[in-house]
Length: 376
Ligand SMILES: Cc1cc2nc3c(=O)[nH]c(=O)nc-3n(C[C@H](O)[C@H](O)[C@H](O)COP(=O)(O)OP(=O)(O)OC[C@H]3O[C@@H](n4cnc5c(N)ncnc54)[C@H](O)[C@@H]3O)c2cc1C
Image 1 (cartoon, helix red, strand yellow):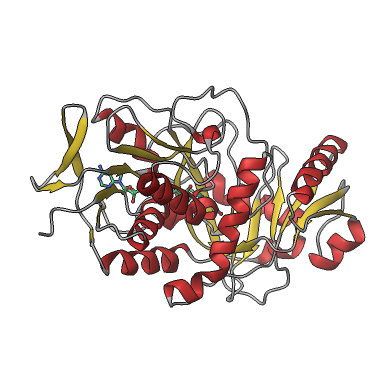
Image 2 (cartoon, protein in one colour):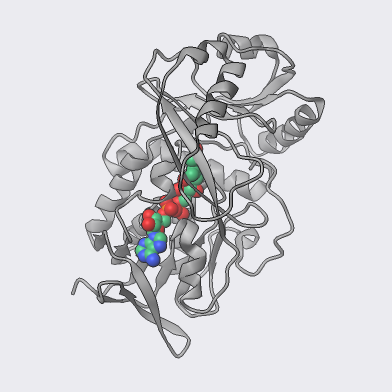
């Protein structure tokens, strides 16, 4: 029967698909229900950056393990995912930023990441034409990377379908609970799907889904805009991150050379609106050209927006809930693509084995949310 399975996943982004992939590998039949089409949410709107430079041992570990999984994905999913290790460079334009990066580098190196603080001449070698004004150096990890979210979701979905199903245009409107245990979900077109496990992987909509079982979770959407330029010869390899309040981050897509990037708006833009602004297009062009003046003549060919799914402390939520069988895997805070493979694996292990393979209490649903991930 197509409408019964071992687990139902709500959401066809990187988190739902990675979780479904690893559950399938553990022998589960998965039915994945997506309100629109795969990648319709944040995943298809992200810029594809993958890094390991985080600030806490747990986030660093998850990012490192995820990187390993990206590295073997081509063979696992039996298709190219445009994975390319061109690095990430966090620029320091102030002594304070430099000190922050140097401290984090100590923790990251202790955990085995090839990262160092590099000086101006090295930066100018790596990013030809960068404007060195005010630049004190940068935190550089050459093994950080990029990949194509569409190809990865597609690869995961194909694997899920080998045992279960991926249903697009299935909008979950109700989660049915009997004796404090999930039993099924109902979709807008009045279909019911049965499973003893239901996983909320609805990204920016995770809070709405949790409310269907009367649980309030701290995941709040924030709008982020992004853009891509015409293709050009590749002349730098890494994601260049300028975390000044009026900074931005961008890289050149592998293999075609378009520049793709965004910036974090100040003040932030809470809510579900996915509109775009002329201000972003103008500012993004200005900010990129300030860093690398030769980009000033480049044409922006597309501009869009998507949601970051924020939690108050900048860490994900990966946990079971007080309703038996109902799991939450969300609140990726703008890092869901890069963390997705390991988060999916962790979720599948936790669900099938009854405990997480390593300590992830920092991702617990009921935690003190006052900590902060610095490398947001
Ligand atoms: C501009 C931008 C740039 C980004 N850049 C990066 C980056 O470089 N690196 C990185 O790691 N991350 C990046 N991110 C963040 C990343 O995109 C997200 O963290 C990640 O995609 C979250 O994945 P998800 O699967 O949790 O959510 P989503 O991809 O949003 O998937 C959730 C899915 O659930 C579906 N859904 C919702 N409600 C229902 C329902 N009732 N029934 C059925 N389905 C439902 C939605 O349609 C959606 O497809 C970026 C985000 C944005 C917006």
